[in-house]
Structures are given as structure tokens and as C-alpha cells.
Image (cartoon, rainbow, N blue to C red; front, side):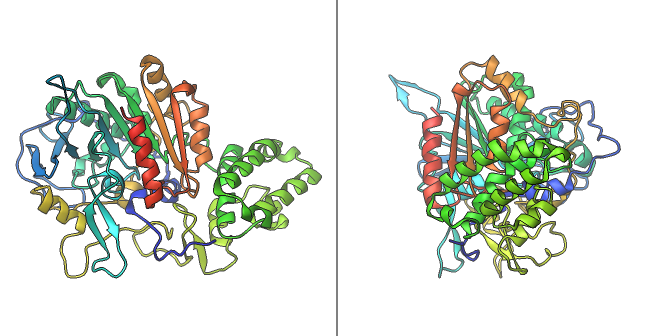
Length: 519
């Protein structure tokens, strides 16, 4: 039941999240200082755009006016805003690409269409996965035998028919910039959340859309950003819905550190699914669906595995042996190996050894993908075979994404479009004291507070069973333990990866659910 990596749908989009970000969670000796003037971004007078894709040197320059293009049945608007608003020397810029249709008329009066703002994660990832691989009006389609095989085509799965879309590229991603003075200030959890909230506020005001139903969606670290943004929800109009896609939420609970038993229990069902997908573990599980395999593994994790881990050093040898035997049947690891690891298998070691072939490993963003255990190339912090970073085709100076922005959206920017920045990811400060509650890093409580304050606000969570970057059980745990009004929370689990919309069938399920949720 293994899946060949050669045609596996993989995107820069999944971005790095836990696959590469967690090893980089290094506390800074001094928290970065955010200038007192920094706040939500806005407009400022400036000139043309910079050509550098790395942190830009002076002069600071950006687009000062929205760029609009007309397409069949809709229009696009690209906006780049300085950060912070009105600053003489901004720290960087943030940009967004919007797709808008004329609103329907009811008795001669136009009813405002719903607006869905979206961003991916990383940190350091652009919105390319959601924008150009999922729900935008144009989508990259791979057709074997074609040159190039992957080309932009009209997206039959777009949700633009039901809602207007705004794809946000945070500073340092896409065409958005980080100037030299902005690196330490912008690459923090709190400032990142404030900047994103400010962009939404400014965009609504500039486009005159404050009365539209507003939805915001974030994937991967973008889910952490979205939850953190809710601390600043008072700066926004009342929200209609939040969409969390493979979100990092409770970062402390999912950190596999000594003494944190939750992390092992929450990743266990996804490990079992990975083993089952590749024919490991008990043969009796092979006749089941992925949903059944996950559910049975989750029951074991909650009812047997976690209680055993909570015994700590008091766990008897006999009970440890019984638990190891059951884990062995599910994971395909020997009981002795599990006991040697104190029933706490390291997830990266599991991914690199579960196949039983020294040269082969599984992807973390998509455990169906098989790749090499060889070290990653210089400058790349992971050898995850399910993470692929695109580049310009041979003989072309522009990537397909850059060509799309310049030739179809009329965006007059000559600098490179950055789909994924390892520099941003590696320089990120996750330990902002204003986001952390004491020593605990989990912004989901802000979501609960806003949902209590706004009784019409609803939440949709979407996850993929084959995701071990942000395991499904971890996201569910965060949502179920944040005191959310669960009657207004919806969950959709798909047989997909960290990008749960990773094939036509999953994308169709995802877009159908979005249409039902956004109203």
C-alpha cells in the first residue's frame, strides 16, 4: 500500500512547520525589541519596488497603490502595505492578492459577498499552497508528458463562486519584504499576529468592505498566527468564521520533551497510520480504512498508552512489556526497541527506520511519501522527501508563479517571489512573552475568548491523517481543551497530508465543506 514519491503531490506550501521549525526553537537571550511606533500596517508614500528577495537595504520602496486586473468573471487586486503604518522608515511590507466577483443583487441592492482571508505558515511560507494549489481561480496542475508538466490552469475547484478571496504573504515571503532593521522585530509571534490583523483591518477599510461577512483561515503555523491574532480581534469587525487547516496550536503539548507525555500520545495515532499505510504492524489492520486505523489507535493512546506513560518511572516492568507488545503490533517496531526507548519512540527515528531499509525514509508532511535518508543539500534544514521547493524551469528567469503575477495579474514588481524562506524560519522567535502564558505556549485560549464574545462566530478545523508535522490528534486536543463552545466547532478529517487538500478527491471534499461553512 506504499505510495510512490515520484508523483506524490508535494508543495512548498506545507512549509516547514514541525518538520523543520521545531528543531529551530531556540530561545533568545534577549527578546527582540519592537519599536514603539510599530502597529498594524497601513499605507505610506514611497516609490517603486526593491529587487532583492533577501532582507532589503535602503532605499526602502514598495507599491503605493493597489494593482487591479480584469479577468473573465472576476477581478484581481494586489496590495502591498508598509509595516508599521505611516512609518517614515518601515520595517518591511506585507502584501495580499485578492480575487473579487460582483455581488448579487437582492431587490436592486447588492448584498456584500463573504470575504475569506488566507495565509499559510512556516513561519516563512507564502500563501502559494492555498492560493495556487488549492482554492484560487488558477491552480497548478501536473500532467505527465507535458512540458513543463506542472502548469497553471483554470481551477474548477475554486470557491470564488461562493466567496471573495484574499491570500496574504507575510513579511519575508512572496513579494513582501523585510528590511534590515525589521528582522528581529518582525520575526516574532506577537508582532507577526499584530501585523496580520492590521493587514486585514487596513484591507477592509481601503476596499470599503467592513460590512462584508469576514472569515480568516490559516494553515500550519498560520493556524498559530490565526489563534494569536484573536488577541487583537477588537481591532477587527465582528468575524463570521475561522478556518484552521493542519494548525499548530498547543505548541507546548506537542513538544516531545522529557516529562511531556502528551506529545507521545498525540503523535501515536499518526505513527500507526503511517505504519499501516506501508504494510507494517498487525496484518489484521490491513483490511481496515484509514479512518478505522486512526480511531483504533487513538482509543489505545487515550485508554492504555497515555495512562502508562503517566506512571513514569513507577510503571512496572510487566505492564511496560504488555504495552510494548501492543505498540509493536501497531507500529511494526520490536517490543525490545520500544522498551529501550521507554515506550516513547522518537518520531524522526520512526520515520527513518519504519520501512526497514537504511536508505529509505517516510515524509513528515506526508507519510505516504518515500524518499532517501541522505542528508539534505546545504542551506536546507531537512531531508523530508515530502517537502519540495519549486524553482524556475530551465531556460527561464521567472518561476511560473512570478510569471503569473507579472503577466496575468499585472503586478509590476521585479524582485523574486519567495515561496518559502528558510532564513525567516531559522530566525524566528517563538518565545514571545506576550503570547506565552507563563512557560506555556498555546494561543488557542484567545480563540475561545473571542468566540464567547461573538456568539455568531464559528470555527472549522481541517486535518489530514497522513500528517506527522502537525498530527490530527494534537490539533483536536488543543481545540477540545481550550474551553471552546464546541457546538460551533466543526471538524473535517481527510485522507490527506499536511496539505489535506492534496489530491482531486480531497480538494473537492475540502472546497465543498468551505462552501457549506462560509455563508
